[in-house]
Length: 121
Image 1 (cartoon, rainbow, N blue to C red):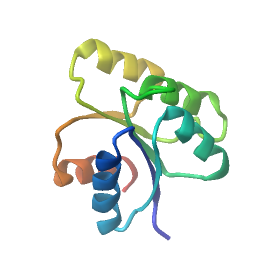
Image 2 (image 1 turned 60 degrees about the horizontal axis):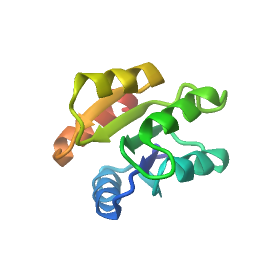
Image 3 (image 1 turned 135 degrees about the vertical axis):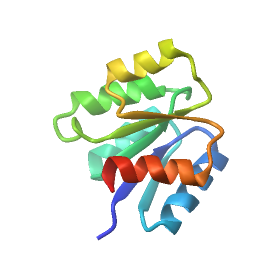
Image 4 (image 1 turned 90 degrees about the horizontal axis):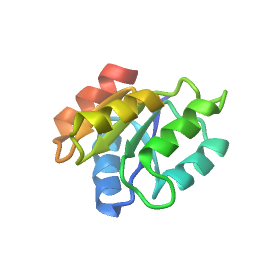
């Protein structure tokens, strides 16, 4: 059975690239357009990992991570933050919220897959 990853990004093209890259490597991918949509999906769908953008409308990546960590069902789900932000303060905010890792955009498929494999295999 393949691992399921929730890809959360307000950019359809980024979600498409994530989905394509991950599916080509055997992962099952579900997509959400923002943090609020992502939290709603997690109520009905178990996932092995979440990859989220930081800056999104409705609920940003930090809010999404906090929501994931507050829910006993998803509390220990690994979350990788995927963003153009590279400032230490933003990374610290993400870590404090419970992010497992951080990938800075732009990134290559190899970098994404290496991070995913490191976290969930």
